[in-house]
Length: 179
Ligand code: NI
Image (tube, rainbow, N blue to C red; front, side):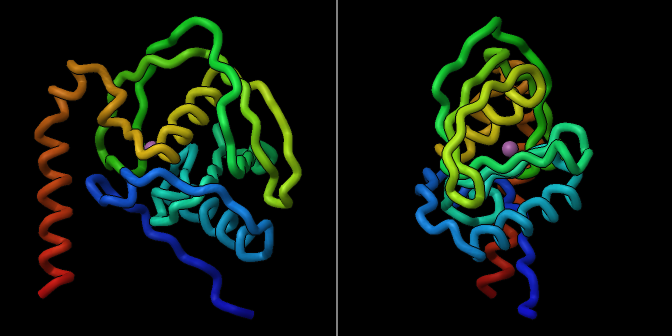
């Protein structure tokens, strides 16, 4: 048996995080292997959601689990938002690509999604509350939109040194890789 995939999380300001992701066209074993490895990475990182660009893949794949219970695993392949509705709610969000950084983000409470399963079967579903928030956050990743773009100006200012630290870390990693 082939060694299973292992993913590293791409940390801001890695350029892949800014690239729009492309539609998945092959619903094959490779896709399932990618999804399985994304779940492993998400759980090991104690995240509630992960988008493929966060592991360096420009594909429209999201995995999430809001509770930690296996039955709450959710996979969205090629998701699109059909409708946002309900009152806007402000809540604190973090992101595995911004370790240690949290900020308040305003989002509508409900979202209706059209997506495909890992087998390519289309479905539509409504989500609300925390799951809706996770989905909207992860959908942003597929368009190259990040937490730093969405958080309140006050939180962006409060975290500015942490953002600068991430940029410095990224530069020094690149320098090491190139030396
Ligand atoms: Ni994120």
